[in-house]
Length: 417
Image 1 (cartoon, rainbow, N blue to C red):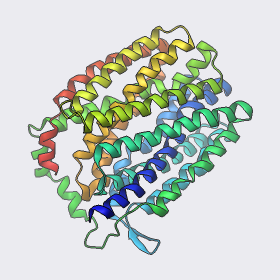
Image 2: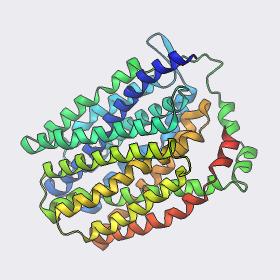
Image 3: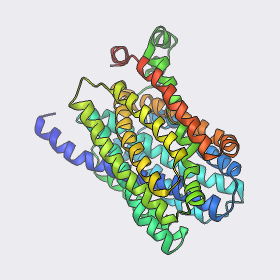
């Protein structure tokens, strides 16, 4: 592929993938910021019940390798071409935006029905996310650090939109109206399906069962796990990295309402403002990774973890909403550059031919922390309160600095690439 065609592909591709993550940012704010307020503050559900609901609904995110494997192996005809990713992106998108409004329409006291709908909304969202990631990794025209920055900026722009616009709608009207509008905006993921470049695959190019078996073969796994620090410490880091969000995010917003008397709009505005600084942080992460090579991604992640720990301690000590703003601006700067570094590392050690399953494996381990954290929240938050929970997750973040610096990324590239 020549330089000119690569440039054209990048110009066409980056806005589309950023736009898809924009939609994911909207889904994230609807379900992890506004929905907790709806369930706990307005519908009166207790923390334990909400923790159970959110934990069960999150299970599809642990199954991301399944969507990766299926899209690696089974292609379908779309627009007259044999494609591996975009047919699944269509299905995932439809499930996501079609079911979002029902999270505030169905009576949440009808536990089985409510969790089932939430489960399938997450199933569609995780399928969409997995296949967009896989298409990103296998696209040869993309630059890893730049792409990682573009992905997260798109996501934070989605939270910015949802925080200000949908937050205003929720204050002026109802939760149903806000969620319906969020779902309608989410249909823009179909633009990605129509315009994103994806190479048509022939039968010979499709991933075979033997390819997957080879990756998971006894000899290969033995070679990888014997004295290869990147696997052991990398997976330990991934499995605990998001435990802070699992334990705090779903209960943070109701805590803001109950402790500081924040309105739904103020919570949305808070999320939007912090997202602006996350965008700044993502740009910093890209600059550190691309322009200041001596830093290295592991050092960037270590600094981010240190900032998270300090930020959570300060969050436990604040007494006003204004103080909370200052602290979380600081935290989200770290979130921005930390996520760029984390995703860039995983992209670098992913084999393009099996990008779906391999990258999804990394992401599934990242989701373990969220899953475990949500489950623990049902015990920890009622026992320690939110302030005590913030101190606990700050300790987790400090401890994670150790496995980050033991990851051997150079050896990983020797084995995988």
